[in-house]
Image (cartoon, rainbow, N blue to C red; front, side, top):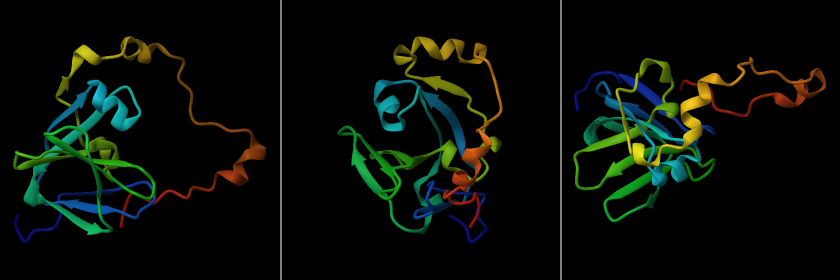
Length: 151
């Protein structure tokens, strides 16, 4: 890790946990394995990583769950946002792409665990696409409680 400014920042949905990446994340991927599906509550887990020394916690603390003998998954205890995927015997740690303040900067390069890929994943792009919309009477109730994508 250098004394340089962070390359990217991120954190959980509620803002209780924040982090900084001190090097450019690499090896961006999505994983379709069943363990990642359950950990993210989704079709897949989008991840990218840095050397462990280059992940700095700037606010709050990470809670972890040992999903196997080899892996610990980090999340925010307050809101449940999945934050990290840590193969314990490696010097690299992955962060969830969606937890980054600028997730659009990351382009996945590979899909892992394709044996677990759910059939619907291949046809998601065929679904009708609409912008987020709510009936006008719901709008006053939609004031976001989510932490903004910055410190």
